[in-house]
Structure formats: C-alpha cells, structure tokens
Length: 266
Image (cartoon, rainbow, N blue to C red; front, side, top):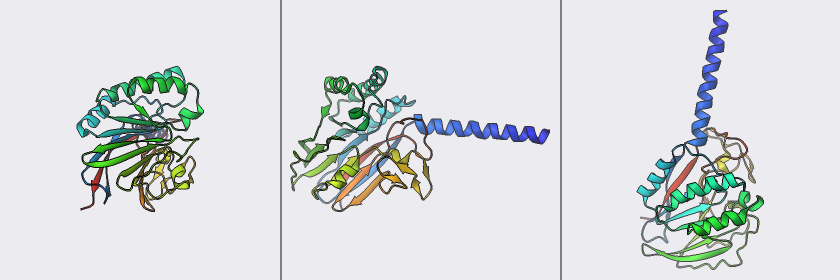
C-alpha cells in the first residue's frame, strides 16, 4: 500500500511540475537576442520583432516592454497574427498590449497574418492600428534612412500576397515582412536582403536535435521552423511568437520576442 501511495504521489508531483513548466512556456515571454550580418550594412540597425501574439495574456508584460525600451530599437515590426480571432475581448487584449508598446514612441510597422485575414472584425482592428500610429503595410513599402543606411521595408499580406508594388533598390537594405516565409520563398526575387516572418510558432512542441515536430504550412519536421536561415542571397529570420493558438501547449519552445541587431560584416 505504501509503495502504491508513493507511486501516486510521484505521478502527481510529476504532473504538477509538467503543468507549471508548460504554463511558463506559454505565458512567460523570453527575450531572444539575435545578430544578423550583411555586407550592405554600414552601421548597426536595431529591430524588435513581435509576431503571433494571438491575444495572449503574458504574465511578464511589463518586463517585456522594459526590455524593448532598454534595447531601444530603431523600429518595431509586427509580423502578423497579433490577434487570435476577431472577438471584441481578444481585440481589446491585443490593443492593450499595443498601447503599452506604442508608449515607447518607436516607429512600428504591421502586417496581417492568417488569423487577422480569415477572422472577423479586421476593419475594427485596423482602425485601432491606425489610431495608435502604427504603419500598416499591405503589399507596399516605405523607404527610410537609419543610422546612415538606406532601408526599404516592404510588407506583404498573407492570403493576398503580392510583389506588384515591390520596388527593389540595390543601394538599400531590402527588408521583407511576410507572416509566412514560404510566400516569399515561392515568389523569390533575389533582391531581398532580410525576410522576417512568423506563423510556424517554432513547431510549439520541439525536441532536442530534431527541432519542431510540425508547423502550419511546413508539415512534419519542418526545415523552416525557427531562427535564422540562409536562403539564396537572403537571410530569413523566423520568430516563434509571443502566443498560442487552439491550445496553450508549448514544449522546449517558450514564447518569445526578438531583439535583432543588423550588423556589418567585419
């Protein structure tokens, strides 16, 4: 009887530890520090990428905002699925997060993901994006000068992806925002320097060495699941996201945001 009780107690403790671990993975965000290099870069450019927020209830939100403020990026990019589904409650939760973010007064760009485009009330959310002073790029671009670098930021739609308005500039650092990197890979031009994406959630469940088990649109054991990848002349960076969808389930794949430095090759 004592042996049986010990087994039950052990299983209960193991279950509790697993639940606490998964809870932390799903609701406590970590800062991912990234350095990406290009010969076209003259001086450092700092970018904060936030993707796949999915109207999440992040437990350390103030810490996240504080870390972004400390990093002091030149621009922030929101690469889609900032809302999970367009209900009033979920829009309000995402807007609350964005209000905190925009209090930092940093130039911010936004593109839509599949959850925004396939769900209801996109117009309502876009009106909030406009109210907050966030630049929404729908298959269009904007030219910037950052720390002596010419920069071209081009943002794409998820289901209505188009390069029709893409105006490459060989002298500029061409940055593509695409919720799903496969859209760019399938329509690749060769002039893209950096491609920033999300959508995969890093597989949500990851294993050592193997990586992500499955990612939407990429299938089982995806090659492009999380992190930086060399793709022809370009660098693809896929952030695994700040939220969860369907189920709050992550393993070895804690929710994250990326503070990225684009650096010259020295």
